Structures are given as C-alpha cells and as structure tokens.
Length: 134
Image (cartoon, rainbow, N blue to C red; front, side, top):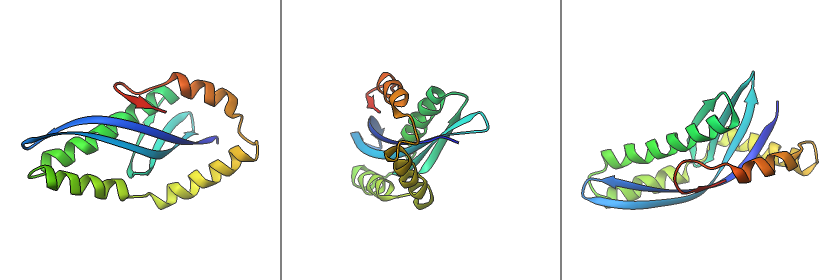
C-alpha cells in the first residue's frame, strides 16, 4: 500500500456570529490507497479525513471536510474571540497515530522506495476548489 506524506496550505473565508474571518493554515496530511479506495487523513491539524474512488476525489473531499470543520466552529462560536480560540485549539490538534504513519512515509520517500516523480507532477496539477496549494 502506497502512502504519500503531503504538506498543504489552505485559505478559507468563514462567516460567523457577527464576524467574517479568513483562516489560513499550513498542515500535514497523509494520502494512502487501501483496497482500491483513496484516503486523505489530517495529521496536523488532525481529527478529520476523507475517502474517494480517486486521489483527486479524496483530496477534494478532504478540502470540503476541512472547510466544514471551520464552518461548524463558526456556527457554534458566540463571537470572533470564541471562534479564534476554538480554531487555534483545532490547529494544535495532532493525530499522533497518523503522524507516525506520515513519518514512516517520509522515510520511505527519502529511501527511494516511493516514485515521487509521478506524484510530484500530479500534485502540482491538483488543487481544491478555491484558493489552495498542495
């Protein structure tokens, strides 16, 4: 099973109770293929994942899930300060189990066991809807 460690950047515009905020994050994710299904799991921030029939579908769903987390936090926040505090807490969250897998995947790439040439070309051509970088 191939696992690819990803570094990603996202920018989302989020509206809440009396505020509008642009949330920008740089994070880590792990893309893997398992039994014909592709999974993208959040490492840092952690706590969310998405599956798809293709790499593209998995990444697109992952971006949607990230945005939904922010929208949920905004909907529950009483105001901007509350939103800011909750988002910062979410960003501090690390999925330790997936981080271990991510670190192993990095070592596999460094050891030359994963042909990143094809992945690198693929990754540069892909993006989520809206402003994003992979």
